[in-house]
Length: 472
Image 1: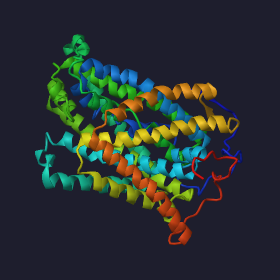
Image 2 (image 1 turned 180 degrees about the vertical axis):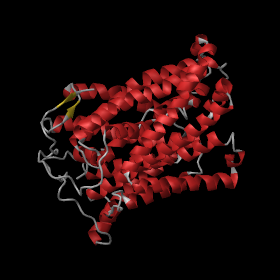
Image 3 (image 1 turned 135 degrees about the vertical axis):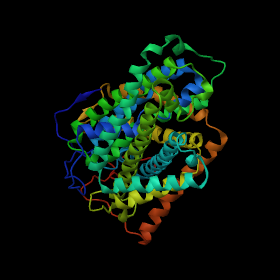
Image 4 (image 1 turned 135 degrees about the horizontal axis):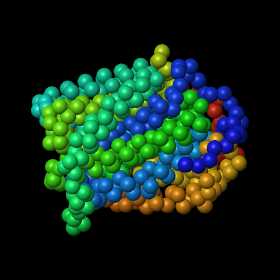
């Protein structure tokens, strides 16, 4: 995925400061990191069913083979280089601030945090979609609302208890969630019909649903960067974790789709959220269905706690940079960002009433805009700070960086072009809030209505030597 430099980490200002506001709790090692990334990005095949419904087996399978090279690999490579260059909890906010200035860094933080919270609102929805076939009461109405809120509270408490616990839980859940698909694959061997894998009808493809589902299931590789300050030896651990997680994610999507489309006659209209549990029933019976439903439930819990960790530590990192009020830097006795967790959990509860498709489309739109800023920052830092220490470097220099960013940028344009008018308007309103919010916070800081502080252990991006700002 690139090459390692033997030099020690230094900041973009080429000074080697101590870690900012160091968390003295246990750091995250390689194995938990792999599963944290796995749950930031994927969590298993739960939620990929719509690709078959939208485009048929052939395009669904090809999508999860080709799409990672267009999107996942470039995003993972950028995260590996930038995350080791800036091993602190601000993540992509720090990258954009360094390249484009604090204003755009704040906009990046706002859009990515909001898309992360929207993403997290999906997981209780997916959990209940898998559960409703066994417990119909949670399919709608008050029981569904109560179940959603209850799940959010319980999983938020797990985040409060510490990132080490979240990492351990992610490993256990990951193994448990993938095992039923291995068993299902073995049981399905006698019923496999490879001819079903090539079924397609290009005249009957819902490209909007197909692309949004692929995009949602294979993005968020950069989310782990907001936890870089909590990782043990991030300059080596982070690239390794991204590499192993990439293999796990692709395998975790492609293999179940191969089984599901090959062992059971394909009825595209049946491929909706939770359909893998029906396939498990056909192949293995009730016991396998229950196992897979339990795996789906736990997998969604894993995705929830991983995403909330990323979102809450991002807010802490922004507060360390003086972009948010100082109270966001407050940690619990377990080392977790207390205020960030509460804000992220509140956002999830407020958005939990949206449907699956609406959540995915709105989240993808905001995420796309944020990724464009990341690509620009990645290239500009190659140009402006070519000699800054990069413990992990993507080969190719500036030219290679530009070439690598072209395919995912084209894909972003396609995804945005397929967005509905409703999603477009809602997303623009959400982005406009960020444009207004940043000047309002700066005004509050000037009037001393709220306390802001920039950690002295971090480089100052407003220094003309390290900043290429679009906003003076």
